[in-house]
Amino acid sequence: MINLIVKGFPIVVIFIAWFYTYYQGVTTAISVWTASEIFNHCFLVIPGAFFLIYQKRRLLFQQSFVANYWLLVPLMGTLVLYTFGYVGDIRLFMHIATFVSLPLLIWLVIGNQAAKIIKFPLYFMLFAIPVGEQLIPYLQELTTDLAVPLLEMTGVPIYRNGLYLDIPEGRFLVAEACSGISFLVASIVFGNLYAYLSFKTLTKQLSFVLISLVVPIIANALRVYGIVLTAHLTDMEYAAGADHLIYGGVFYAIILFLLIMIGEKFRDKTDTTEPAVSEISLRVSTKTQLWFPSLFIAALFLLQYAWISNIEKPNTSVVAHPQSLNLQQLPFVVIQEKLRQWQPHFPDADVIQQGHVQGANGQNIDFFIASYNGGKGELISSQNKLYNADRWTLVNRKVIALTGSNTDVYLTKLAAPAGDNRYIIHWYQLGKEKFTSDIKAKLYRTTHLLLGRADNNGLIAFSMQFVGDGANAAHGLQRFIATNFEAIDKILPSNDDA
Image (cartoon, rainbow, N blue to C red; front, side, top):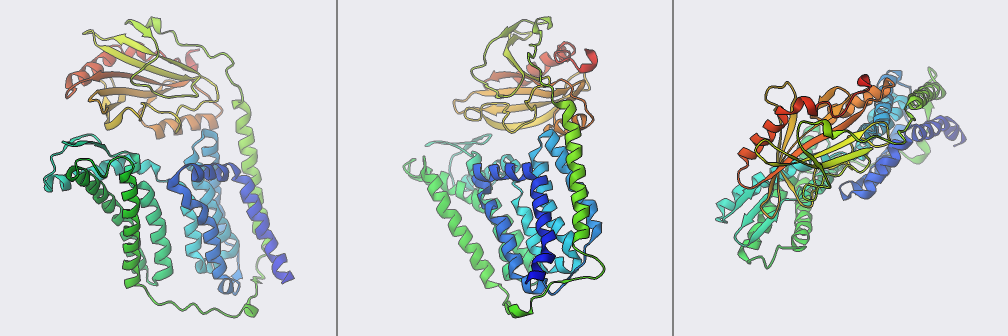
């Protein structure tokens, strides 16, 4: 027993070093697990994975632990990814690096033969990564696309306006809570775990995982269909307000029960017999010792710490008094005042300027500029919202090219319950470069930070409210920006211009 503790001590040291190195990744992930019901199950993933490893302890300790040093290469990759995410505040990168590095460390130390015995628990650790919220808009669209034809086939008079569904009895919004993302993520995790525990062959395992992916998507569309149909048949007496949430919970429980019943029908009989506890022994190969990989890993962690410390030094300056942009130089009338209808939200911007301008035909065009010039705020952040989601819902979004310019911009169409509609054209400007993609803008800025540069950057957006199909509004807004783009382009000066 003493020998087991002594030999296993380096592994404990490695886990402590891992936690210290990826501390920000762990703590920010826990904050996401706590704040979002989508990821509440993540609290059970790592303990569950180690419990599955514990169940295999007898077979595991019969293997020789021969370190696989080739895994230092992907481990270095996770350190680079983590550093990139840390510097650029890209938490998804931090979370991926954190929970990919943990099974890599275990695999590196115990070697290939031992890792084969616990391959699923190592893979299962990846489900601690809080990823999936990015799918919400697509799931909302998919759910609506599936539910509307079902309602039409049932004879329910329905008009679709983006994610709004109008029937004679009332209006429904396929909101984020109706996307089914919580049930989808939980179903995938459950499907993988159940497939591991219930099936021996890879074909059966993959088939059940696929079922656990498809079933919740179809089930969620049926749920929305059932709610709207019930409201139609009962003149909104049922399935309105909080009722549809209760019905949804019951419906999901039924679907989960059906998944288990499907799995039990085809479940393989497994032999759970294990060697006696007295047969446990840890055999470390004479070719290597656990201390050797521990030293390599410690050296990597120290290098990563030194790298981050070196990067942070030149980027500690904060602009004490950020300057507002001079909008009076623009070739049109600018009226600066707070926007009441549109309401973008960029809480940590160094300077926010907003108001109205007059288009060529007298159109009232709203503008919003959030600039960042060295402060602590992040241009690309989950806290930043282009519009007030409580008032507006997304109809569609696409990239368009401005007439007479090589510049691409984002054109977004929004709808409101009162029947109002709105177009927004926006882009990100980082130094002299312009981006429509959040991801590309974030990567560009992070790369510059890693190189010790911190250009001025910001968001520029113009918007017009309209009634009807909005074709004229979209063309008018595009024409206004294209005509004045040369002047607008100079609103955010780059450091090279200073």
